[in-house]
Length: 106
Image (cartoon, rainbow, N blue to C red; front, side, top):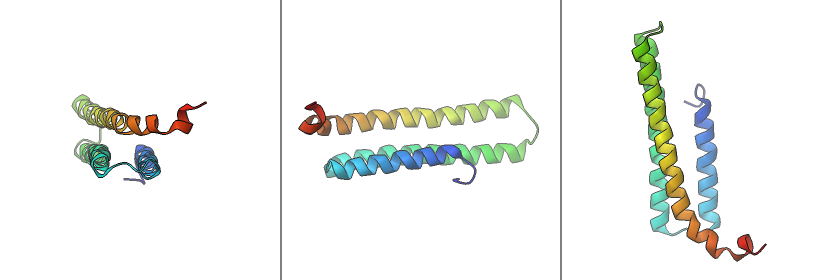
């Protein structure tokens, strides 16, 4: 997936940033569960999207409007998952940002 999908590198970077922030803020085990579920949902959606694109290309090498629609919908599922993960990340990290007085003291 990393060889063919540039967005996989973005997801990897986002996952590393989330993990680094989780360790930095020492998030609770409960919060880690939410972060892992959020990251897992994005990785799952991206993997299924990639698989569907490869399968669609193999089944219909020429352009077909239904193949385009299915690829667009699969890509939208990744976007929906990423938006949901961003919301989860915001909800998890917001209280920790409030506790970090040096962050808001300036």
